[in-house]
Length: 420
Ligand code: CUA
Image 1 (cartoon, rainbow, N blue to C red):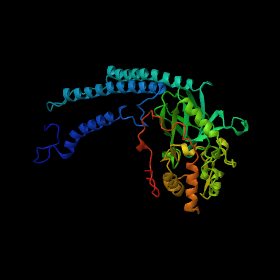
Image 2 (cartoon, rainbow, N blue to C red):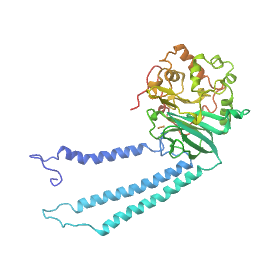
Image 3 (spheres, rainbow, N blue to C red):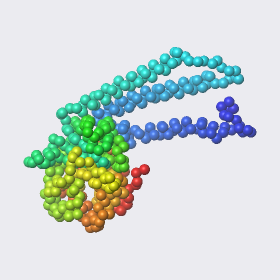
């Protein structure tokens, strides 16, 4: 005992730091085991990187497993070697041990063995990286263009016209929730128009940077019906943490119904809902940045035409083109995945915009003079932007079993938890 613990005067017990040194590794082991036990697929967290939901993420999962087991073998080997050396060469007498300088055999061994391990890990990793990149270059498949903005996602379907009869209306555009038909090979073309972002849906694909002025492409299989959560994975400014989105994999007929509903002007799909037929006057200001299909005012920019908002030389916020609000009543979330889409949260969002999402470029018009009645009118209008018979795809089983608690619900009037 005395050999290991520095002895204090008149004290045969180990010192406090000595006791900690003995307990700390045990505690660390307990923590690691507990954490590992908590990340099994049973828990199925929506942002988990180890609950793959298609062949693409199965490939990635297999790489994790290879690297995990290789690391475990190395870890155990190194620990055993340390324990052996500590016991075998512990001090037995006051005699000075033989002094050795260098060992060519050892040095070659501890250079060659790690190099071989790294090469063995590199081969399957490179194969997956190149296979995935090649699959994303195909012209076949279901194409979606995504433009990352501060701090939301504009989603365009280049092969689906916004209007069947009028090609000048361009492609169908939505925001923050990407619907795709089950069974399709989805190819996402990613582009940014101001800063760098990163597109990541952990259960469906790897992570890919979104660059201004350069298109990156990503491929994933829409294998199982369900909701899959994604988020921006590259720090991109104040509201980076609130730049979430969803991929909703739905049956083909639900997807077709969604496209048909998107193309139907609100007044036609809700002929008995006065809130929707008569666009509230106060909503006019919103149309400078937002579009609603079927509304005559279509002035707001889309695509790469303008940035999503900026601060001018005096630091004043200048709003830019915002999310396309067609069918917004059917979205699960608002404010880029930050709040559940309920009338209460929509009201909170309109009244506390900049408190709920710090840095946001949408002005708080309530603070600038909208009345409570006008806010209610806008809330009713927006929540009414959905087919009278209900939303396509609503009530489908959630494939990734998303924990509802992972989407915030903020009571009216309350303020969102500040981002730490
Ligand atoms: Cu966009 Cu982080």
